[in-house]
Length: 253
Image 1 (cartoon, rainbow, N blue to C red):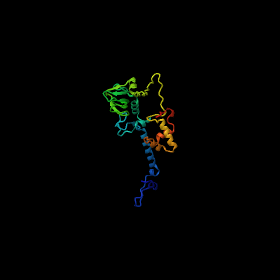
Image 2: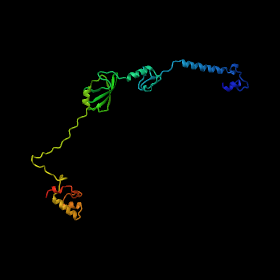
Image 3: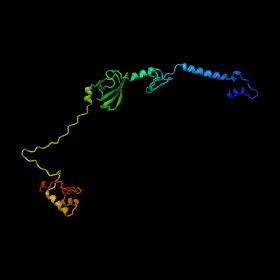
Image 4: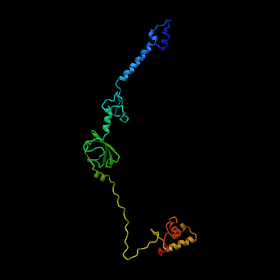
């Protein structure tokens, strides 16, 4: 029945007659009943036990407090609120606390697997039955940065502070090779070498001849050919003209 039908006092069924409605309906009693029913429903919902949201890891089938995730309201522990399940929050805090030593090692220890490849590992976290480790020193098989999960019953050796300081110390750099010098004989003056002398040095005659060719206008490449020297883009004549050698210290021939 529509509101319009209530206001007009009946229902038009097409026969020309109208159904007479009770007086209490026309006076709004039906509307009061509806309001009372809604109020009662709200009060019942408020009195009902509130739905508590639990905390759960994505891969787990149960919440942290042990309730099945199916049909339960839950969220990831990182999204926890004050109104969430207190038991779940307690379990989450317990798991975040440093775990006790398991079979001789704990989180933060540096260990070496017995009969392993010689690599060293940092224990990142320990839980019942297993531990997550990070390779911090290269071995024959595993390299630095590799991660593994090992059993807490694995045969491992924990490094002491002194052992770890020695194992992690960078290798000593080899001492730089010192140039060996030939000591001059006692009483003999050190032999003076011409400036810039390497594998080849000109004689005084070479220098005089190159200067003469330059006076005549020959270029450096042409002088190389005139002197019978190997082709070097005119390097030797150029160096001679730039006084790369001390002329007074050069040999006569």
